[in-house]
Image 1 (cartoon, protein in one colour):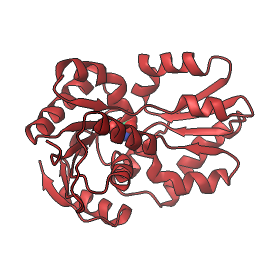
Image 2 (cartoon, helix red, strand yellow):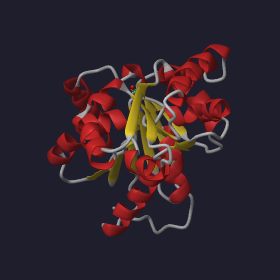
Image 3 (tube, helix red, strand yellow):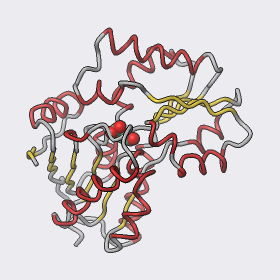
Length: 262
Ligand code: DGL
């Protein structure tokens, strides 16, 4: 079982921001990444829809004998992790959530900003976490309108993208936030633009490294770490366009992977 792959999935390419952290921390693990780009975005979908789509991918990853499954998507975690955990008890699931707690702990202005999808921001999970950790501070929330599409279409560095992101960020800055959480796994690919706009005035939080840390911890607890010394093999599946995934990997990672069309 130890040499079996880690399964990682997202509604699309965004979860590759989590995958990058996982392989950095666990370089000798094999991984299978599934991008459901054909059905992306999940953010505007109903909970029922998100559960159905994610369940199909979980079954696919289990069929590939994944020893653990990382849900590299805030939207799917909020809508479906409880359901998936109770339905597929044979495997551990690691989820990702907008990092409200560290943002609330770090703020000096008493005002934090969260960018996430509509579904995440409306979810019970998000609102319970907000109540628990940020009751006495101002939490500004905003959907990164069009951001997921920019990443999916490899349209990151255009003037139109920069203008759109700048408008969104400015609304947050006007509310005096000093912490911005990237609560959708697509958004870290826009980090250079976000940083250029905020110019060091705010702390930007990407929860992906913490998710990689949690994955390692759970594998350790279950004695499932791969003890081999050689580097892992990386397989990528997409329900969308194989060439877009290949281009995306070439731009955003130095790693070599085997790409499959689902
Ligand atoms: N990457 C996903 C997340 O972390 C959502 C993108 C989408 O709307 O499909 O929430």
